[in-house]
Image (cartoon, rainbow, N blue to C red; front, top):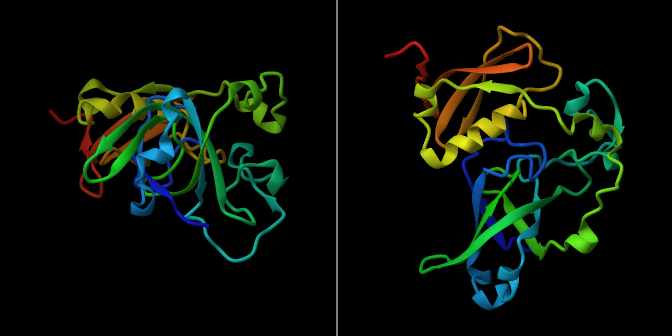
Length: 233
């Protein structure tokens, strides 16, 4: 299969990326086509759809072989489930599937047609194999059962993000950052209230603690540099 495009967004690393597409609609991204596929004619009619499917590669989880059972993070990492009953990246074929909001299509001189999308769960630079329109009359099944994942549909953390630290993020990325943190980026088996975690987002390193269902941001700094603390003037 050929890589037709790559996604570009604020996630330079895997940690912290939403576990599913659509969980944080405020996360913006662009889909930039590879030179061979920068033909606007290939997108004729796509502007009429509000959502699209992205088929992509788990490019940061490539490995030889596969295992029939995995440990879903939401189950604490200590329960086995069949790989085909999960959306684990460790699959026989490393293919991901995401439903995202299509905001608009822009034609740029240097890149040709670029898709502006929201609600992504992909890392920056992820290769995309195909794009298909989302059809609500066939693709949406509100009555469907969710298996073990249904227990986490409404799971959210309360986020305390001091204003002076939030202001260190680019304005267009602030809602996305809060949304990502509310989804609880930690592995589900981590419960130490004194442990400091960090995610890389929008060129920043956001460090936080979690206790009693409340996530508190304590430091923000440039990615791979010394962070600022909430106590700094």
